[in-house]
Length: 332
Image (cartoon, one colour):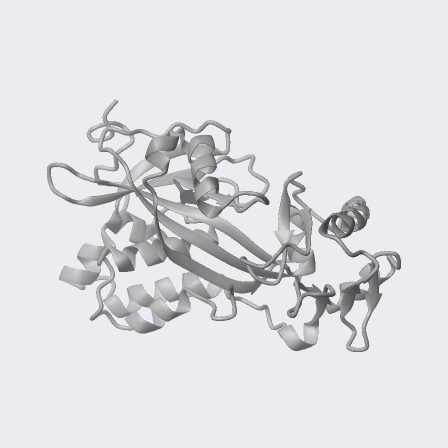
């Protein structure tokens, strides 16, 4: 089935074009107002909820690593320290993994016991049975592995891949973006808009290998086509979640130009539907002009795409502020 002219293609009528309104008629919303809406979406990913990193979070250190591998909520530090065979409290109130746990494997096994107890106590939600790396920087050796759902409770860096799957209309040259709606039974952000493909970065795979894996699982994109994805940068943010835990995430961004006759097919049940949208409707969804909204961190990746595609133009108000806001300088 061809995407163009099929039910998957958005052909108008379900959302106003903010580009037309902001760029030409200016009768309802100005470019300034539109950019303010975009910045609000960014700020939602940087909301520290009144907490201060230096005061309200305590560093988690591992011997041999120059930088902390995490930042635990101050109120949780004594709970972790109660596992005396795994952690000890430092003079600054921070946590140190016991130096006697010398290898990644030893630390992983010890931390696994801790997180299992915290799960039983109801302190960890949305358990995935997926191990991810805890370390001081993406290209640093792993300190230990931990259940994905536990990254926030220790304030460890999280990494993921997000793919902008787009199509160029062969008749008009217009760029259209595939937009997924998350399944309603997803443990996080059910029913919200998402990328055609996105996923957590697991242990043992490179970002490109993860792109290939996720492309097939989430959209039925075969390996030869998935390998055409182009790395275009990264976005990053620090935020505090609803449990008062620090999330420090960096997302590797990829662009994947798809054939005009390609229609994604979800393989893992995590996507309810796919639609092909013009960039005007994508911008509308970010600005809150649609019935549904993007999963919060997707807004950063999509805004970066709109900037690079020239949809958001350099002479728009707040342009440099928006571009700069998409990356946290402390993320690595």
